[in-house]
Length: 464
Image (cartoon, rainbow, N blue to C red; front, side, top):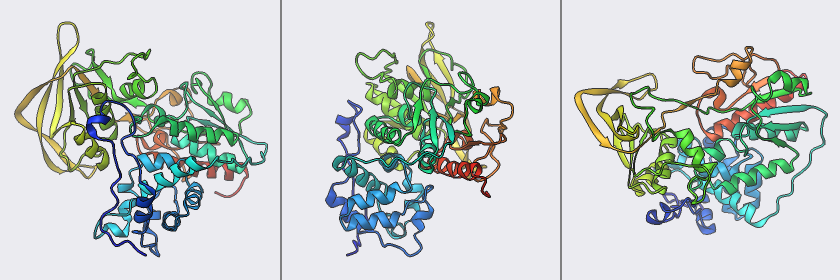
């Protein structure tokens, strides 16, 4: 029977006063009763618009129908046909702008909680089963995947299923890319990332860490070592700065460094070897998910006041609605229509305040959002001791600096020639943030899957 409720099931969460004292996961997940009830809200539409909104093409009505009938393992297997990382995507994908945005139930109410249901069935699968990994016979060909983030993992998974020997090269000492160093444990527990990576290794994929391609090895070296093709999933890890005065003061971080110290190096632990400044008054510049992740981490490190400094209004802020909601619950202060002008420091070189300007909104710019315009003679100071810059990232230029045959655009993103991600070098493909700039986990996964298909076609000399 269809559940005609206009509102989705509310996922239980930890109390804000408790959760800001540690890094445990905030969302607790649906109960079985909630999952079945929510699944019954799905109308099983004939045209399946939600599937069109999924970058990896999950059979969303199919897995939701299985949940409604209490066939949880069947639901998981349906998802797994299209997605390597259902536990991850159920937590961090922006479903509200993808699959759920096209849900028919959202026309006169709230869309079906697709992401929450995906999370539920994948978590239940790993609670109740010992996953048996099918070993595919090898076809005698090797592919190197550079980067172990979502794009690389997804590409490696599909190539392994095609029968290739796949070796992943990761620059850091721990695999996972942005899943490991970028997204805090209170949104994505690291045990889940490890679980997904171990599953891939059981499939026969090898992961070589501490390998910086472009420095430790070149692409030419990899081809000389017998690889038949290469996929570049190196992400976008080079932080941007604004160029305002004072960015070199002590206490100024890029969000990349700040989150890497916390997520990868666990600087929040009492006896951590990696230092991090425990600011009491913190300003985070930016309004995306990374900015909110950094702000919420600062709160958990003991900050009394944490500000989000964003030059547009709350209507334009790009972060996920859920993360904004959680940040407000946790006491994060949003200073919108505010732009950073200068970072001020004291005689010892430490941050002591920021100079900000009030903004107003004009006509839409190229991004489609209203252009922020500074109000004349409307500036003010905010007392802070830490500033975290979270205004975006670009791909690291190391590869293109060491390989002149790789073409890039003016932003440093790799240029591709077709839908499969073929670069300007034959048999070298690319996808994810290295091509698009900073985007979402699921879009990177979709690009990795598409590249795997292209590599398979190319190495078997089939028509693209």
